[in-house]
Length: 439
Image 1 (cartoon, rainbow, N blue to C red):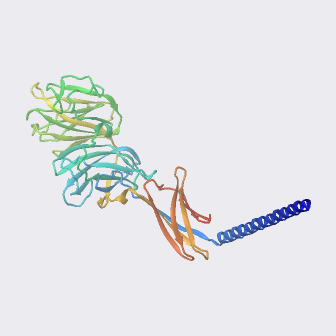
Image 2: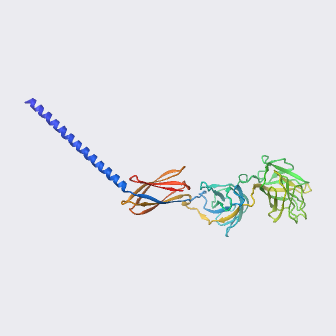
Image 3: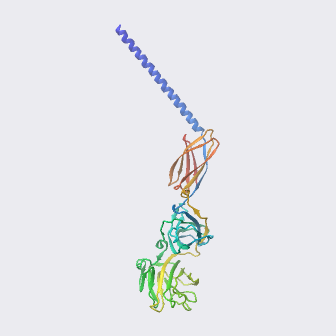
């Protein structure tokens, strides 16, 4: 009897195991069927999605000096003689109302009376980005106007233009004026010591109080530059005499002399010492001079008194010298500053001025705008947008729904967005993609 009971229990256990196994198999099969159905349904839904990008546009909102409240765009039109690099241009900023034109810009939004808050950038047409450029502040009339020289990295040939921006409107910055970084050669004689890395053969000259003083006498050469200059180039300098008497001072560059006496006639150009005719005029006030040297043609312009002369000598490459012939050791000559800059004939010209722009938070953000069309029967859910090119790869997580038959416009802002050729890709929740190639 006991033996039969044990056999019966074993049979029941086997039945239970079989039943449970059958149940497990049914569950597994059901899940597989359900999963297969769901996957087929998902694939079907995915196949039903039809998406395309109909348009992509890129807008650059660059504002290099984000702490400065205002800026203005200015175009520099290239020379018909060809493109130039590292070219110096003069710009004057006037604190007041008026119409900007030529080299003059009017604004009432410079924050500091000494124009310390003025900065300059150049728009690099290759990268599409602004970059700061060197400048030197020639003079400033407190609260009224200031004149600057800027070094523009590249100006294309006419009729094309370079674009620069002038920033201002920040009351807690100091000037970044730097003549050495702006010109081929520069000295403002401000440090009280003659710079022997720039000058040599120093004779009877001293530096103090922000000026270079050459002691008077006959045919004096006070000093010459260490470097030599090849045509074409331009020299600008600020000079005065000690007394309203015989003066005959200026510069010699290479083999050519440029001498002024502030007389009744124009300054002189020669290949040896030359002396302007007429009695000396107002010698003791500062005058600004401009010397232009080409291989076979030269100009000498007293900008302050508006006197001009020209000559046609064959220029021989050489250093720049500071010279004078006052005929008396008691009649000295003073130089406030001097610089040498690049020159091309004809020069690039000042073109159009843009409208003054005010800073906003969006000023530093670039923007890509997409138009996404849903060609399918169901609503699309966009979860990601990619923007890629050779150097830029970025995924932007988004949450955009596009109804059937609709076009949705969506924008992304990012200061690092590329501005040239790129590929834009959108990805739906179901894994479908659309690609648009720009440029």
